[in-house]
Length: 112
Length: 425
Image (cartoon, rainbow over all chains, first blue to last red; front, side):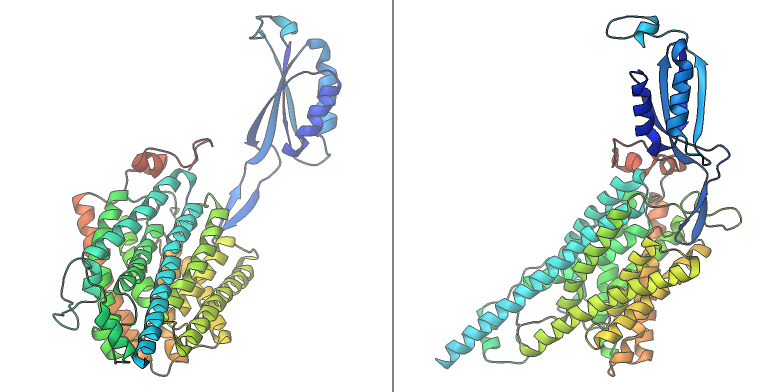
């Protein structure tokens, strides 16, 4: 099993959700985060004092998936979240050691 | 028959003037809500509940202390000198039927409205003056040190200089002209704030090692804007009520003119402030626009009757421009004022006092300047001593830990926005 973590632009969330849904991904966890890669921040002004806002709001999506789905999931996310502009985000894939469905105690891929 | 008509008319006019004082007072009372919202919007969320508590508490303390001793100090029955009023306690008297008879007979100096209404109208002014201080010392002052200051300020410091002007003391004798209190209320409050801020120090993290100004943005600009509009609304009572009558032809016209000029000055202040910040920084800083409105209002408060509406707009605009530069300058001097109170009420207050001779030939620049000096020196000295005493006895600043955590937790034991993740700064 794999844990796919995607950092995307917040307004792309709906598109990504729909794209994942259409390939059969049944659930996800979403967090509001801040960050930057090579995209620079912007300057704000408050009562004459300037300050640089380095961290840009992003949305983090985490999904647990079966190994077979990995490529189609990566494609779906990249397609939906991409705009061709700086700041589109990143996808990280990590090994998912165990997964358990709390309600039924199922483990493994059926728990996803 | 004739005396019945006269009595009837006098009765109605007394009632109308009394009603007017009460309504105007109620308008000014609402300014407490204005201050509360403005300040809540300009501090960080971790300090919001404390400043709201401070606002409602100071209003209450002010009214109680003014009732106990302040009002009678400001309008004393007997005086020690033109500088020192005589003291007496509690408000007890009201006009009886002889007063009505006197009014009906057209006697000079007859009471033409309720004395209770007079107290009510005046008490909301002292609360306004005290409220000016709360924003300047926000986010780092101990709540009860502040309230301790409020007790003495509203009982003694404000009433003494109020006596000098409206109570018939030496400023009034000199011919000092301050219609609704640019000096007596706004400058006084701002100077008390200045003394406090000097002894308190800036918020941690506000000024960098090389004197850079680090912004600490307010948590809720919609609240700040709402607060400003409420203050603007309340000002119609503040200036309008200061005509001190409405139930006759001249006063009615005067009140109308004061309402118009008050409004125009606020508008002038907003436009000028916005144009100023747009010119300097290329952006329309909302917080400066809000301060501009208030500075315009303060600037016209000493003379809302005599200017034409156009001139009132200009006076407001002068306040709007001045307040922007004052805020920048105070920051350069490391005088940290989170809401700009000292600039809005102090600097614009001085402007307000000094422009009176422009439209009022009975006023003189020299006397107005003396008024500025008198109010400033007394209020600063008394306030500085009081803040100093409080600092020695109980300390006026929260600890570094508490300031980091937020005074909501430290002073109030609760959070203003408990469902949102706590602030970082």
